[in-house]
Image 1: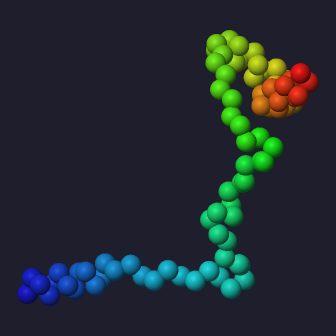
Image 2: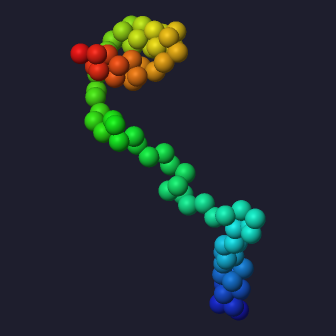
Image 3: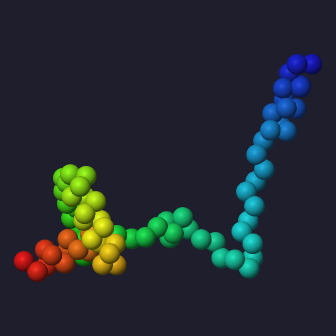
Length: 79
C-alpha cells in the first residue's frame, strides 16, 4: 500500500506543461531584454578615490546634469 500511495503522490506533484504564450503577444527572448555594451567603450578603468573626493565628484556630476563616467570620458577626450 505504501508503494501505491508514493506513486500517487509523485503523479500529483508532477509539474504541468508550460503554457504557450498568448496569441496576441509575440514570444520575447530573455537575451533580447539585455542591453548590449556600447562598442565605443570596451575598456574599463579603476580609480581609487577617498570618500571626500568621490562625494565632490558625484555632487559635481549631479549639479551639472551628467554622469561621472561622461565627465571622465570628456576630460580624457580633451587631452
